[in-house]
Length: 128
Image (cartoon, rainbow, N blue to C red; front, side):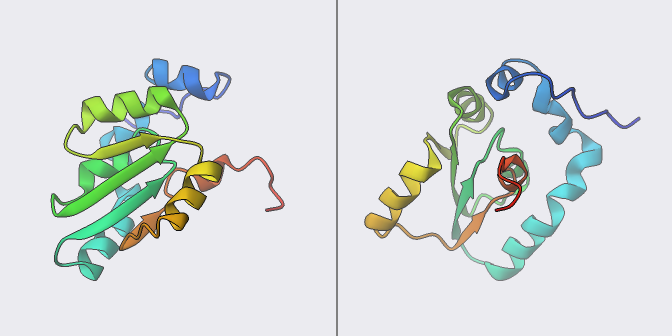
């Protein structure tokens, strides 16, 4: 039986305090990650670095190969705390992307791939 998406009447921080995002980890949601993981595996048969902008609960990590040097960034401290518990072998940063991305560019920090899997649908300005 497919798990229904949760009610969206809670704040984003409250969602990380309860079981809000667990539906993304349920078996019926596995296909949502398959295209990304297949692309990455085909494009990078050896080790590669991946930047996950707006990583949320880092559900994508569950499907990434160990050869992936992963960095997840999210503005939610609660989300990052949860990610660190679930995936202690991966790297996560709590940061505002409007501040962190220019810093990374300044340092010429590079990645083989960047994903926005959990970020784009959070845009509040529908025109952009």
